[in-house]
Image (cartoon, rainbow, N blue to C red):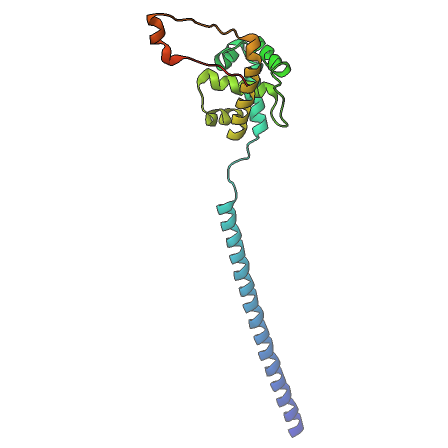
Length: 189
């Protein structure tokens, strides 16, 4: 009997040890699950904060599409629109473009066609605009706008002798003194 009782006692002790081990394992597993939950929650919170802080919320703009739409309204719109915006008719605009390409050596750059460059040039002159206003309308950088304006200006200066006639005014007498400070010397590049 004693042996039976001792065997029972050892089995009870073994059961008690295994149940305590099982409970400890379950607690460790629960702690691990809680820790993993906290880590994942913190990671998701950090990712949400990063997304909210650093990602652009505005929809992407298709600048090429906006530019083409603006130019189409100028070139394919009504005659009045072209005259109001560029101060020339469509026909005169395209003739001037052709002259500037052929005789003024105005060339297309890799990204900007000559018609757009000339339209920017005329727009600036017609409305006395700043580069920052034109850069917004034509969806080009201010640097591109400035470079384009100067390229067209050089081309216009090259063809100016052929297409513009300058008069020499000989002012004598009392009129000469009045306009003396306004003498203009034109030098062409």
